[in-house]
Amino acid sequence: MLTLNDLQRRLEIVRAKERSVILVTGVSRSVAVLIGSVLAYFLLDWLFDPPILGRWIAALGLLGYFGYTLRKHLLQPLRKIHDDDEIALRIEARHPVLHGRLISTVQLTRAQNKGQFAGSPNCCRRSKRTRWSRPRRWTS
Image 1: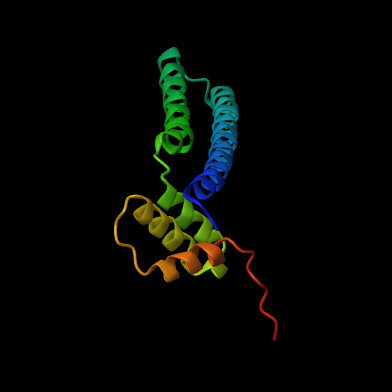
Image 2 (image 1 turned 60 degrees about the vertical axis):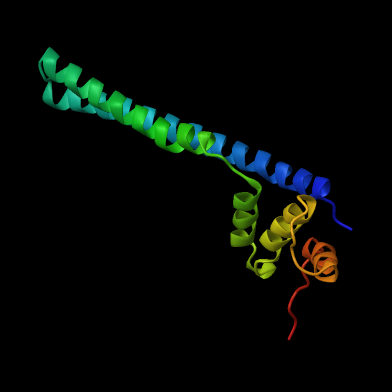
């Protein structure tokens, strides 16, 4: 039978993978924007040969865009709280064969451990037993 500790451990593994994906994609996007900004700055400088004030404005604008990208794609997603419900919903979005069973198991297990009424004990046992079993492939 699935216990709350098993469920939390599995969700924590997924949460750690999610953080690493956010970190890799955020850093990659930020580096790509930085490289593109530097190339654009040098290209504009070479084509138009602006005065020093124009160069400073272009450099500050491109630095601002880099900061925006860093904040939007790296810092904000890392600060966002990923609770068990959100992780379960993300897993279900990627695996539609679960049909909402994972989120219901997370919520039923949490409610039962708090001592709240969460439905019949037989329903909860069946939910814990079947929710984490490997989904079967549909054959026709």
